[in-house]
Each structure stands twice: as C-alpha cells, then as structure tokens.
Image 1 (spheres, rainbow, N blue to C red):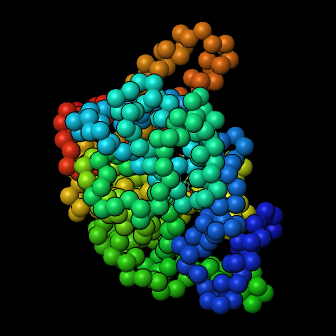
Image 2 (image 1 turned 135 degrees about the vertical axis):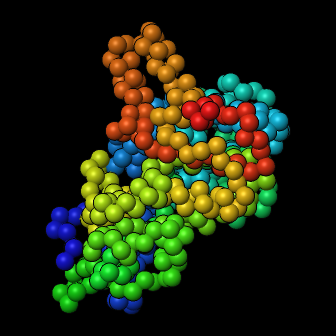
Image 3 (image 1 turned 90 degrees about the horizontal axis):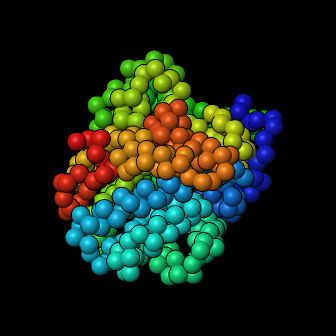
Length: 393
Ligand SMILES: C[S@@+](CC[C@H](N)C(=O)[O-])C[C@H]1O[C@@H](n2cnc3c(N)ncnc32)[C@H](O)[C@@H]1O
C-alpha cells in the first residue's frame, strides 16, 4: 500500500486518478506522472504559478541569481556572431518556468548587444498556460518591460515551421520534467511498474509486462542488459526525450540546441548500483522519493540520460563540442570574474555574501555544478570553440 497518510493532495488530480483507475484498472507510471504534473486544471505545473524559488518547492539556477541568465546571454551573443550575425536570429526557450531566465537574457541583450537586439525574437514554448501568464508578468515588470515584451512571442510547438529557426533552442531543466516509465528487474526479466488500486481502494504498485517494446529497445540501443542486474533493480525510462530532440532539430535550420539539466551518460545513469533509480520529488524545499505523496502539489523529476540525447543527435546529423558540467560551462563564460567583481563591489557586506553564495551554488559539485550542459549544432561551425566549451579545448 502506497497511499500516504499525510499528503496534501490536489483533489482534482486525485479524483481524475481514481476515475481513470476505475475505467482502466492500471496506469503506467508515465501516465500517472503526466496526470500529476500536467492535468489541465490540477496538475502541478497547471495549478499555480509560484513553484520555483523561495516561495515555491525548489530552486533552479535562474532563480538563484541573474548572473546565470547573463552568462547564457553572453553565449547566445557569441552564437549569433558565429552564425554571421543574421538579422533573423531567434532564441526559442522551451519550458520557461516563471520567466526569470528569459527576463535576464532579454535585459542583458538589450543593454549589451544593440545590433542583435534590434530584430531579436525571443520565442517561448510553454506547456502551462498559468506559467506562460507568469512569464509575461515577470518580463513586463522589469525595467523597460513593455519594450522587452515586444521582442517576446509565446508559441505552440506546431507553430514553429520545419527548417525555420536560425538561432538557438534553449532549455533549463525541461527534459527531467517529461513523464517517465518505471521499469524493474523481476524474476530476471525487465518488467514495468504500474499503479493500481487494491481491494480496499488503496493505491498500490503492480509489476507486469512492458507496456511497449520501446522500453526494451531503449536499453538495447544503449548496449545495456538491465535484465541481468540484481533482482528489484528499478529505474526510469524517458521515452519523450528522443522525439523531443528530433522535433527541435527538424525545426532548426542553422544553429544550436543548448540543453541544461541534471543527469548522466547512460553507464552512470543506469549503473547497477543505482538500485532505486533517480526519481526525486520536491515539495516546499523538501526532497522525497515518493511520487505518490502530495498528488498534483509536488514536482516529480527523473535524471536525464544524456547518452540517449547524444545518440539521437548523432542519428540526426547534429554535431557536438561535448557534454560538459555546468561548472565548466559557466567557468568558460567568466563566472570567476563575476566572483571577483562582486567581492569588490560597493554593496553591503551581507548583500555581497548572499550573491557570492548564489554563484557558488551554481558551480559547486554538491549543488548545481554537476548539472550537464549539452550543445548540439546544426549547419554551423564548431570552430572557433564557443567560450562555454573552452574547457574542451
Ligand atoms: C522544472 S521547470 C523549469 C523552469 C525554468 N526553465 C527554470 O529553469 O526555472 C520545467 C518547465 O518546463 C515546462 N514544460 C514541461 N513540459 C513541457 C513541454 N512538453 N513543452 C513545453 N514546456 C514544458 C513546465 O511547465 C515548466 O515551465
């Protein structure tokens, strides 16, 4: 029985879950996660706008300090230069949360790249209407917000035509939010974990045959024999990541796909010793591994398998200067200099300390420094190396 005793459930999600379970008997974990995070009314990303930051459930890098967005803006400006300063350069941010990163990038480019700024279109693809509203609000209240907003357009995936984007597709902590299947080793076989109800009406997990052969193919492609792992090994499979990348690459005519997230390459991501997988749930800054708590009111994530993104990219003809850590990426873009400048600034000592602490969290290996930064390139030169990848030279 996995129904928690103390759980602040969203009643819309709970009712929807119970109704589906009555009709269907059982759900894959991916279907459950889709419901818990993206139910149109009660799902985590659709039921309120303050999820990230002090008043929310977790921090993301842009929420810590504007320096993150400023350094990414610097990288975007360099990409524009590498592409020959096209007048129709576009930035497409996917999954923009509360709009903080977008706002910081827009402010930086307006102030520091007037020629790029003139024709810049910053497109946002956001699945959650309530977050799209929060993003517009956030950008609108920044200095010169009305002008910033003139450069921003919210678009659906299908509104971006094939082969139309010259510029950069950008995401921070998007892929870890895609629904995942849960699989386990049971009786020496790869099986899937479903969610169902027992006779007392309580939620329980149930192990059964795989819901799709794509799960077996997934590990075969990676050259991993998960069935030979120890009994009860469990892990997650993100079947959305590869189609997402294909879709993005298909829309990109010339330029870059910049993906920042936490995760590992497959050997480590699916290491036999990682017996319980990587599911993490966030509720009011508490981390748990129980996705069935706080239905619709907690974030549920799984670490990204970067090998699958790398392999998909190769199959699509994308090139890459390499997968690096966020610490290396931000180091190449000059976070060290920011540190020095900040320490020498005339702000109050407490303010300086707080800002230094935020920068440290971005690069510390125990915090976000171990996040991965993947750059994939289409019809654009790999040389000279972009500043963010100077650690690869
Ligand atoms: C963990 S939040 C990260 C937010 C932001 N990038 C940040 O770093 O603060 C995930 C974001 O991705 C959005 N999202 C999830 N799936 C999506 C999809 N398929 N298409 C567009 N946005 C999506 C969520 O609504 C949310 O805005």
